Amino acid sequence: MAQSNGKIGDIPTDAMTINRFVMEEQMKHPGASGALSILLTSLCTACKATEAAVRKAGIAQLYGIAGDQNASGDDQKKLDVLANELFVNLLRSSYQTCAMVSEENENMIEVPVAKHGRYIVCFDPLDGSSNIDCLVSIGSIFGIYRRDTEGPATEADCLLPGNKLVAAGYCVFGTACMMVLSTGNGVNGFTLDPSIGEFILTAANMTMPKKGKIYSTNEGNAKYMDEKLQRYLHDCKFPKDGGKPKSSRYVGSMVADVHRTISYGGVFMYPSNSQSPNGKLRLLYECNPMAYIVEQAGGKAVTGRGDERVLDVVPTQLHQRVPIYLGSADDIDEILSYFKE
Figure 1: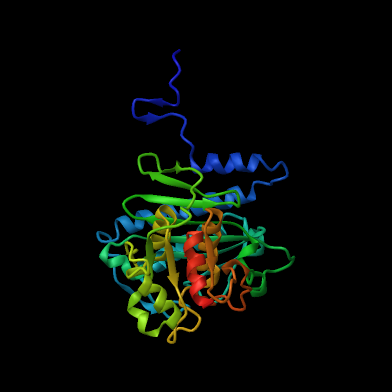
Figure 2: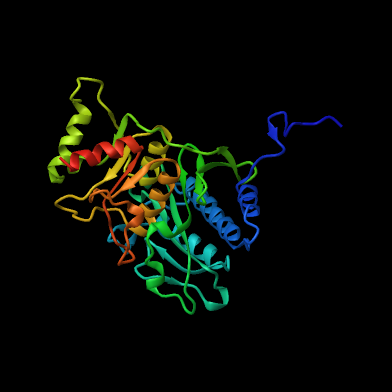
């Protein structure tokens, strides 16, 4: 029989699915139990189910506000509530978690002892929900920690710095659905093939350009920003050397803005300002996972407080906020040089 070389017509017969990829990574570690692989499979299912709900939200009347606020004081959309339920139930039933932290829950989510595993998962089940009703790209973010203590899980077990992450990822729901994942050995992107319901490897070994031409921030807050940062933004638009200015792009959905930054280079920032001295984005389930992925892709992620890495911040609260600047290494160094002036 003739060899197909992994493809017959337009149909791949030997595709690298995300499950196959994770299993191959697991085989590189002879002592691995497979628990992390099972957990990642559950997260993929949660993302696929959330993406399906987003696609039919208008028809199923899932747009609009649910009537409550989440732990951070944001209005909960109907899809926020649905996505959170999907993540919590699928992770709990994976038998690999002992605790969860969600943007939508004020307290740590406990897992029954009978379903306990070794991992803690922090997640934003639906990032960018303010953009839901106008059909802008949104997504899900997650970070995974391995618990080091015994007995019932406590809130203190969840207050871990990002440098303790064992895996992190995000799933963007845009023109396509892509899962971007790192288990500490680089970054890989997997596009959902709706015909078979599987994430297929389409962007192997994703790396960021060392310098980009795009800056991304909410300049509507410029009047409240530090003068040094205002000067940086001015120089982006009116370069000192008279060269071409940088382009400004800001979606208002962290998943979309960070995915573009990883793909094209540049910088994304949500800094502290006089109205939000600690920034707006949450450390455990937004900043840490994204900082982990950006660093794995060759970029940098800092708080703007000296050279402090986002991943080195030790959290004291579940919903702690932190300023963040992430992106191409040279662009982050350039911003920090303004702060040192």
